[in-house]
Image 1: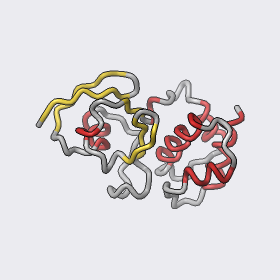
Image 2 (image 1 turned 60 degrees about the horizontal axis):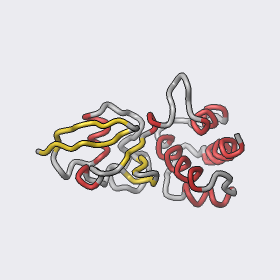
Image 3 (image 1 turned 30 degrees about the vertical axis):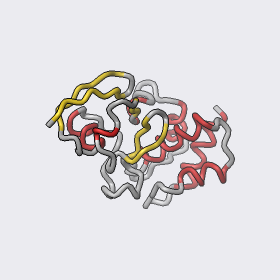
Image 4 (image 1 turned 90 degrees about the vertical axis):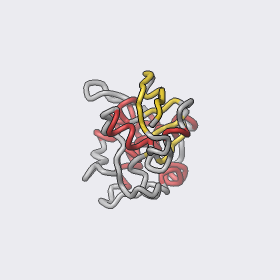
Length: 152
């Protein structure tokens, strides 16, 4: 067990965990952040996506020891219930979540895309989301939400 100081959603947080503990477990179990979700545990579905220095990573497969010097942003770091980010609001407005399980990964991946390309084309949006799985079939609404956020 070791002590790690992480920068999460702009705040320094100290956790005592094993070096190989996945970032997802630290965020959910130690820091009570519920945005990132456990989906597959194999970095294949995207439910656990967070941003590390602005880039999407699959937090279920990245050990905490690998992120100690980086800035982590979770869904909670984008906005609040009272004041959602424009991307989160677009997902609400487009009713882009059916079961809601994939939404964390979709929003976090889209946030990284929009930070690099504020006006992506539909093919660019679909390409960015290609590694995120949605079993409910709301891809059309998800793409519409990202387009809405890009024009807001």
